[in-house]
Every structure is written in C-alpha cells, then in structure tokens.
Image 1 (cartoon, rainbow, N blue to C red):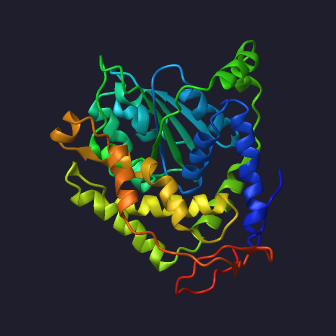
Image 2: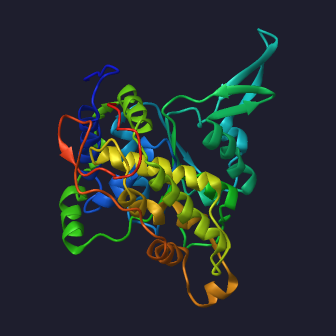
Image 3: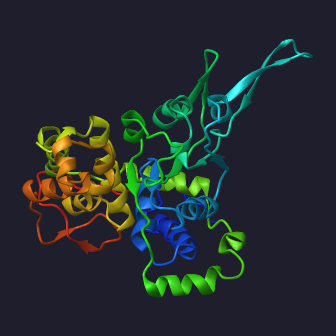
Length: 347
C-alpha cells in the first residue's frame, strides 16, 4: 500500500479516494452522487444516516464503504432488546485479578455500521451520543478513546412504523448528512441483475485504501481554505432556517460546522484547496434537511424540509467569485474566489 509523507499534495491523496469510489461504485450501481456524498462525510469526519425504503441497498452501501478501507469494522443490528452495554461495552469482575476488567463493545471500531437504528429503544440509541460527538466512551467513570478515523454509518426505514422508535432531534443532529439511495434506473437495475445475480460482489471486495491514508486525507481536508464571504454564506443559510415561518426548529450551530466541513471535503474531492459557494449549495439539503422540524401547518400543506432548504438557497444572496486566479496546487490555473483573503497555502 502506498504511503504519503506530510508534504504530499492533495492531488496525490485524492487518488486514494478515487480508488475507494471505484470500489464502492462496483457494488452500488448507478448511484455516483450517493457514493460521493458518503466519501465527503468520511473525509469531513462526520457520520452518515442512510434513510430509504427496504431493498434499495442501504446496508450494502455501508458495507461496501467499510470493506473498501483496510480498517476495523463492526456491524450492529439494532433490535428492541439491544442494550446500551452491547454498544459501549461493560466492566466485568475478574476473579483472578480481583478487579473489574473492561470489555469493549461494538462501538470500538473505525467504521461502525448501525443497521435499522430506529428499531432500538431510545435508551439504547442514546448510547451513541457521546461516541458520535466526542469520539470517546465513558464507562464507570473511566473514559476510553475511540480509534481514528471513526465513522458511524446508520440505516433506517422511514416507511415502516411498527416496532420502531423515531430518532430524537439530538441524535439526528449528530449525523452530518442524510442520504436516500432511491430506486435505480432501468439500465442500472438491469446491470444489477448481471452483477448481483450470482455471487454478491461484496464477497470479492478487497480493501483499496488503508486507514492511515484516510487520516492523511482528513488532515488535507482540514487545511482547505474557506474565505470569509463563504463562511458568512454558510452562517446566513443556517440562520435562515431558524426564522423561516414553515419551521418550528431550525438548524443548530453544530449544523453550521458540519456544513462548513462538508464543503471543505467536497472541495478536496474536486481537487481544490479552497471551498466555493457551489460546494455549500450542493450539500445544503443533505446536511440541513434532516435536522429541521416543519410546523403543523407546513405538514398539512405537504411542505418538506428539503423544499424549505431549497427555498432558502434561492433567497439567500450568493457571494461572487473571480474568473481566474493562480491556484497553489500543481501550478494549475483554476477559478478561485475574489474575496479579501490570504493566498491559499500548499497542503
């Protein structure tokens, strides 16, 4: 596996993401935008909620992403009888040592797949809150750090209500983005019959990237430059959700951070060392919509959170950009923001 030193360029590092993307797209047919969003959340150090009807490949997408990276993976099947200790771990009395010994739970992995997360009780769901936000677990007064990189990929079925517990607002707010896989096109579904008709492609899926390479990518994403007008644009979009008449709950400050980090990851995936308003616009619905609560009147009018975010995008003024400037990457001329800023630094 190729290793990269601290001076590696973003262009070299994004080759790793390209390998992961091709690997996942070999399993998930005809959904390149869904795969790209999944990789964006991974590089932005976020967590992904996959919500859709049964049988469209939610769990397969999560498994394909996890298996494409050579890191520790745990899968948790959420059921009504699942206990919080099954997720976080438990302290067991050791007769020989005459002391308690901590047995780590399923959350102690770099990629954690939570299948049908809304089938567990709220008490069990709350076991994920600390780990998803602080990347640690506290048991019996002791704090245990989780491995890095760390990502939770959870799935849920939005149409089946029997035996399910809706995710509380605090839980949904910890997911950076929500994505719906959707039904494939006729051509993609026909190709799926050829690929998946015999042996599942997951069985032959091999890791194409190492965890330390993903960490290098995460570091590169952290260094992506965001000009002040773009940052202000992010704040304006999120602030508009808090005053919109069709919403009784707007997006939190955590959503502002998530939108900014996702925009930086999107810019890195595009080979840029600076974020543009286009990056913010492309991710606004996925990052903000699942956190919003429509009013009763909006629900009667069949207004969805996604429609509200789209309306806010149309109404919020967009910062302008210059036609061309010299980029700090590889000597290539690329479009760069014409905002008052320090020149982008080399990653």
